Length: 449
Image (cartoon, rainbow, N blue to C red):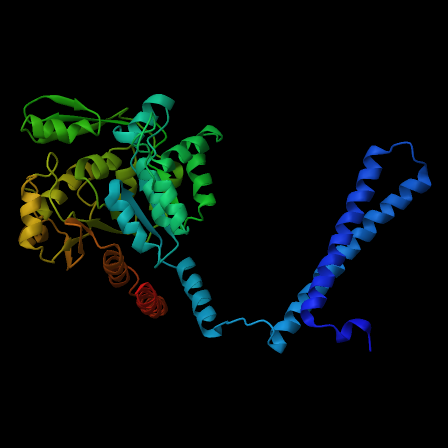
């Protein structure tokens, strides 16, 4: 029997770790002597080279034997490792389904787009978010003015929505400074600004940040040009700047009559056009109709690419009207504006909210001249657009938003029904994936309680 056979597994692990440290010391000593002592003759040099080789061999042996000892400890019960093989198999299968999921391009900006992405990433990893860069307010506007960079705010939100990060990292990147010169500035914006400083261009910076945060899919700015929004109101006045347009429309009590971008020939990213061409579905919105949605459609070639794509074109209707942009708008009014700027065949289907809001919530929004968007089914049908109704509203702290999980589920069901119906295998795979996601959500809620 060998000497090590009677040692307890824990002691064996410690001994092999010490043996590995010895290997590190041999390499350190041998390498240092070779570099600093250049007067040695050939025999000394061979000796110290031999020390380095020996050190490498010792480290390799130590690592191998340590792993063997740990396996023995697990088998003998010294280490308790709980592995649910069925759960692991399910997770691996789900990941494979996500990779094979439908290719979905989402176009928009603001919090609405990031909210939808947060739920959509659980159904497919083939997501491309094309995000507006017209923002000129808040922290994004300050960085745009000070550094001459494109506004990072909407892109940051989309990256975080698709990222696989710990809650602490998410909170850190969303943190806004409370005092000093950085007051109200988001740390995530500064992170992206710093990344832009060490990158060739803004697109490269976005991709690097996405890689760092393990983003599912891809986030792209709609253009790299310094794009600004210019609106003409019904009273004939011209307003420049995304943040100023709704404010001036409210102040002057005049609706938006026409929206353009400056420069008008802003070039889209080739990757964005290619993603639209290859997509199974192109999703427009949700978000501010003019400043987040139409602003993307005005970028050269984007609308043409959407119309020419064989993808299912879906518009996600807003739940509430937005003062200064869509006062009194119905769902069909939203569609008419999108068709006006994007073309007649820009939308095949619209997903709208059918859920009811409490009177308290309605009254609170009414104070800001905002009301629920009315679903006028006949007018929608007359526009040649298919209507999908579902309760996709979620109220949190009296704030109405899209329910990211429900919206993603309805969206995927719509894509499956309209676009992927011919592929029965895919349908069964997504049914399984949807069921697994619901089960996991129930488990997480139990753990939270």
